[in-house]
Image (cartoon, rainbow, N blue to C red; front, top):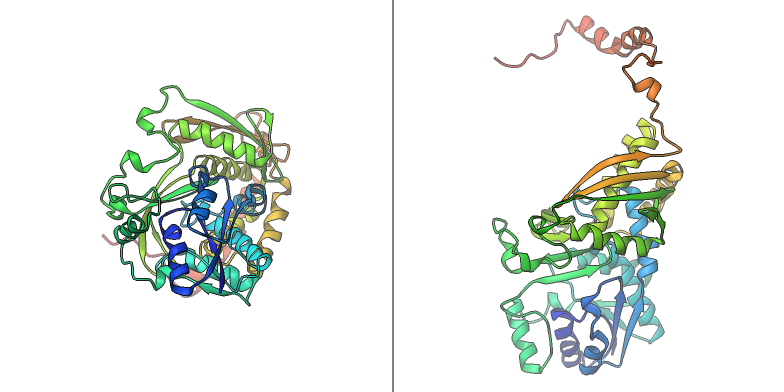
Length: 403
């Protein structure tokens, strides 16, 4: 049997190579996607070869990840439960696609992943494989193997000479890419425990951030960020630069108790400096350029889009149809937003757009006011007519607050 394994080089997948070889007498091919993570890629190919794999594949997916996955989610305004930019959730369908591609190229009978039986990633991987390669068998060893804790896995590694970064003293499970970092396990499993500083990977503590605010300007074209502080950049470079700038100012930390797809609540911390800044800027530009009905309807769709991605249905016709609507709305989302970053906070300092619907003559309360105040009388009479008619016919008064 030949198996393509999604390999991060972390604890679970390092154990998994040996486990698959032992339990399936399998030839193992490892597949690692470069999504802009840094620490995870160090020595990952050498580790895979040390573990006796047939071949180790390291694929540069950064450009595809940014343009094909991150930017559509940004344009959608998709934040799961209003907070999480879904760095991990967006990366999984692309990693599954890469896994399928390598499995087919190397003649594998099956693919395997290192996701747990109570996590979201198992659904994201397996739903994606089902959509892209229904003929491939999917193995999920973590759901079936004998290990019941990370401590047992660490002991297995020590017995078999498998090098891993996780230790019983530092048991965090970390997933990183250019869009953000997810950190769980250890003391973080206690919702009352304040995250220790050693859990954070890419942001400084807001208390240790500079005492002077940092201003950044972000320019958008059709909803896509194209320039940072007046310098034109491709999106991957802009995101990387903004990660550094915002992270140095304590921006990007999220502490979230979230609802997983499998029905449990989990506590994770996230770091997403560039993502949070770009979401803030993008939304502010939409406030300026989208008409009221489109803006309100798109906000509803943003929640649905986030649920779809979080729940592993990236490769669905609904997501594709949503993208068509969203792309149409973004044609007017052009302009520049100025933000102030200060000790973990993001504040809007200014915004401008050639497509701005803000009319000073209509908004002002000065003598330049061009609004026809007399028109409001007839508007309100018609607007309130259904309420007036209902209560007159039914002889009802609106509910009063109980005294």
